[in-house]
Amino acid sequence: MNQQPYRTLILWTIWASAALVIYLTLYRDTDVWTFVQVDPSRITWLIIGLFLLGVLGSFVVTLMVTKESVRCMHLNAAASQGGLDAITIESEKRAADRFFHSLKSTMERKGEPEVETLLHVELAVYERINHTIEVIGNLLITLGLIGTVMGLTMTLSGLSSSLDSLGHDQEMMLLGLRHAMSGMGTAFYTTLLGAVLGGILLRMFAQLTLHGIEGLHDNLLRICLVYCSPDYAQTLERDVRLLNEELRQLDQNVQMMKQSFAESRQMVTEFREEIKRLGESESGEQGQEPLRVIISRHQEYCEALRQQMHMLAVTNKPWWIRIYELLRPRQ
Image 1 (tube, rainbow, N blue to C red):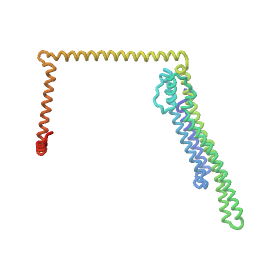
Image 2: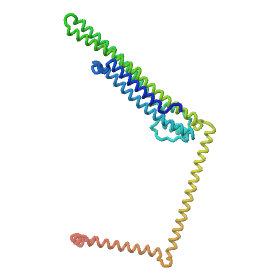
Image 3: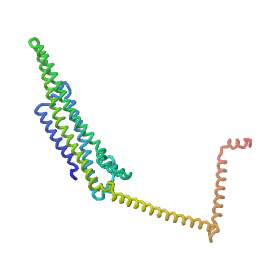
Image 4: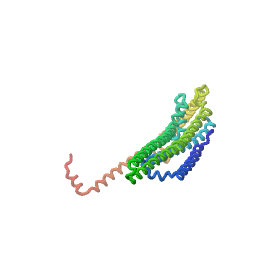
């Protein structure tokens, strides 16, 4: 395989560790968390929340791509031994299994499969999630710019209030300056968080998962082109192989029919022997009664047992029911 199955997960872990170091550096040098707690615009909360959502989505995609890569490694080993027929579908929850299942279904319907199209369809869910992560990264940069504009607006508003209070209201002037500094903090920190979290960290996460998806695509395509192409390509060799497979299946069906006929013949023979034995037993063998006499005696015994049950039921009836039945006019 060109790509190790755990490569994407290892690179994602390394970059996540680097991102943590970057965040700790920002926290130590710029005291970001202290400002986030008192941010009047709350844009920094939104930026951090979207960043965590994007990281979670990237981690989920990384795990799924890693599982697909491990499964692809097993499929490569199976296909190298026996081609497409040696590949067994374990679970259609994986994109690799769904891809080969679609490939086999197309072959069974005598169609010509479009390998690139099938790969694109099966891996489209991972590509969409990765594209969403990229969109979240761009959104963080946009939110940083919006925070910058809002911060500058707050700064200008505070400076205007300070200038209006200059010379006659010292407290209002200090309050306006404090509001202006808070606006500058909003402009600075939102730009910093949007650029670092969205423009650098999250985009790098998206690139790592994208490379993992592309590697999975290349590995599956390689299996098809190297090991499975004789099985689905429209060639005379494929037609002869399919014809041989159909003849083999037909021969198996014929052998099963022969076995079924032999078993049926044996059962008919046994049935005929049983009928013959019953017919012979009617005349009675030495020391044995005829079968007809045994059946007649059994019928007499059943009739006597039925009459006894009837008499017992009549005897067990209450006295008022018996008197009522005696006095009831007979029709």
